[in-house]
Amino acid sequence: CYKVQTYSVGLTGKPVIELIHWFNNEKVGFAFGYRKMNSVKGLRRPIYHYGRRFSVTLSKRWPFTLARSSSVVFSTMEGVAMKLPSFKSLAPNAISIASGYRSFSRFRRSFSLSVYSAASFSATATVSADSEPVSLGHRARKDFQILHQEVNGSKLVYLDSAATSQKPAAVLEALQNYYEFYNSNVHRGIHYLSAKATDEFELARKKVARFINASDSREIVFTRNATEAINLVAYSWGLSNLKPGDEVILTVAEHHSCIVPWQIVSQKTGAVLKFVTLNEDETPDIDMLREMISGKTKLVAVHHISNVLASSLPIEEIVVWAHDVGAKVLVDACQSVPHMVVDVQKLNADFLVASSHKMCGPTGIGFLYGKSELLLAMPPFLGGGEMISDVFLDHSTYAEPPSRFEAGTPAIGEAIALGAACDYLSGIGMPNIHEYEVELSKYLYEKLSSLPDVRIYGPRPSESVDRAALCSFNVEGLHPTDLATFLDQQHGVAIRSGHHCAQPLHRYLGVNASARASLYFYNTKEDVDSFIVALADTVSFFNSFK
Image (cartoon, rainbow, N blue to C red):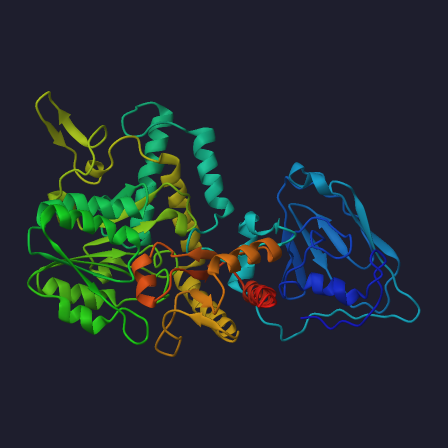
């Protein structure tokens, strides 16, 4: 976005083009120091541009002393505004920045950055009139302070959101506000704090219901995570409805949490598990699944988006096929709810599960969506307080759903913060998130597939196939854990390695493990570029020993 000629930088003695690359580290991003360039280290805070305006929002915690110069103008209000003029010549003005916050104690010493002009140097810095709009990733990053840090001497590039997402400030504030201002147990208290906590807790349930378009908030059951939600269905619905010879259909691409509970239940009931394999495109074979559904089928339990293959399943069609034979459908939506519009009424699935921590919410809470008539007919999963109506010495009666399935004190603060996460994502707009991630996913696949000896699992993107924003891959001759370790320690790039809780799938693919880079809406194409450069360097390093 800039046209830059050369001039000198007093602090480093290098051409200012190095400094401009600093300004343009993420096309529209800039940071003061906190990056290895000779001995220069300081405090990273990104600056984003909107037309000719450059701005950055800084937390009130960050003390800054900003000197005014004729070349660069700062205003120290809630945020910092910066204007880059056209430089005909640069006077020897200085910008002084002092940081004293304890998180950066090792950089507390003040430093000055002097920009001067010599007789033989001149520079011009202008914003291109046809510059591309700021991406969603660049706009969102300001809400995620964790992304603005250095890891192992390099800028953090977080590409592990399929394992857990980062949390925006609004979610952290919601959790903190609960514990600071109205921490109390819910439902049984009549005092102000308990009433306030109960209202916010139940409001969060309504927010989740609205987020996935459930017809009634009572169809939302809070659980510890999606794994517990699947186990709830397996033990409550499964043990009550499955009998010897009944069939449960899954795919080889399921997460362990959608395989192991049904293995346990099938051993107890005599039900039979049947698995759909992959087709030549390395996606679950839909034709095989349809043929497998029969009068013996009682449940189809499948993922919406694969956490390894990045493929998606046509849930609406699967639901129609299953319901035609009287079977129920459970959808593992952990990799879809955070990334796209999920409408449970449109899908018409009987059960759907998701995790808070993958959708910008806190850990320790997830939810089960279940159709009202099914939840009403299901017995309790756990016994104790909250889930009862009346308790006698010889028997108990149970509360209506969802309380029937929420025994004990719930994760109150976490539920409230999950509601805040729903608000945050809705504010951005799930269609906007999905559209942006489709573009980012294609970019990741294109760049990664251009590297030699890289094997990416799952379907190729095309006009008819949109991959999720992740790539599981292997590099010939290298173990994925070695790749992930080197990327982290030498480049600050965070990816995942291992079997991703999908050992049967990896065995089917003929490998023990894979590396996985996964994106979210706060990632940028520059993150992908950094990852690709780092991966190429990592592969080169290991290949040098061959």
